[in-house]
Image 1 (cartoon, rainbow, N blue to C red):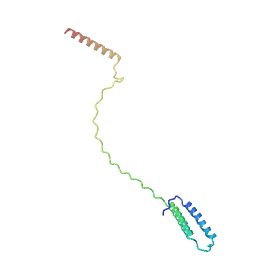
Image 2 (tube, one colour):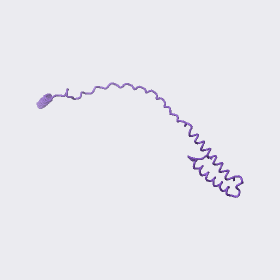
Image 3 (cartoon, rainbow, N blue to C red):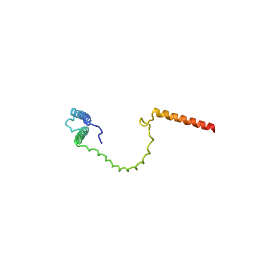
Image 4 (cartoon, one colour):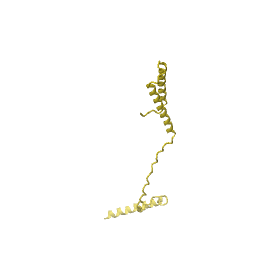
Length: 127
């Protein structure tokens, strides 16, 4: 019968109290010179078993514990190199301060556009 308590001290104490009562009853009775009763023998045997179990637990507690085995990680297969990307087409030039048209350039271009628009309107009116 397994004992499922964390400590046997309480059970030993309870057993000792019952054993003491049984011994006192035996001593106070008129049969004091008679051998121990079956109840006393059972309590003595139980007490001996409890003390052996406690000693066994204490001995096992001093032994080194078995450590958990570390999990071995499997090596990952090497990655397959990706195919090289095709070269990108160059983007259109962005307008920056260096290649930005000046105000004078803008005005001259605007004037040229107005001039060409007026010439085109005159030509279409004649035809």
